[in-house]
Image 1 (cartoon, rainbow, N blue to C red):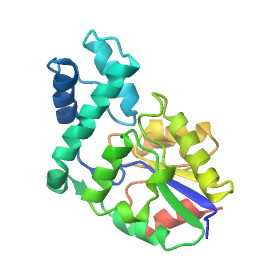
Image 2: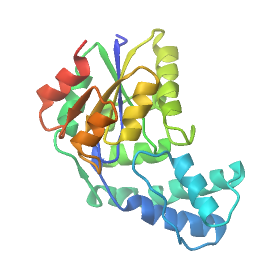
Image 3: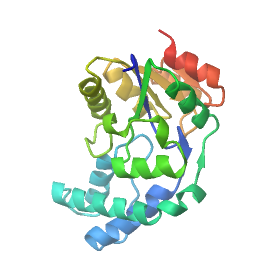
Length: 229
């Protein structure tokens, strides 16, 4: 049965903690795609892969053409693919993440997917490496190649979900940064902030989150936040 609530999860520092991988992967990808060493590291939290890539190329005096962006993204996917079998040793599932995904996936009024700055291939690698993948529908997510603006990812996920299921959804976005909150509010979605990243509870509240959780460890609290009508 198609669900009534569309839950859109961020990955990094919401479900998983794999800090440092992005820097390493971009270092390799920039060298392979453009023959340059990484000199300037963009800000990663809450931003899309396209936004990060555009800033990175500009900072290294390269024009961020679609062709070069696509080349860099292809190298990122290649790096992630090569390191796939080591991923589970390079990070950890955050407390309560698996239990929350499992509890929601057992409901016939909920559909789960992702709104993440990651490319779809990298999102799959991360979710599969940590055993979280069975609980989300990758086909209806919003991913980092779509736009440099994160609200566009929420819009894309809502559009894909509506097209697949033939109905409109009540959308809920769960993430750890003000960017996640802003993206949700931009499209009248419920914004749930989780203070497991670099943003504090107060910062997430100030950004306008409808609910702020310190983490996902209390499954009942997560379900209440997501399902509260």
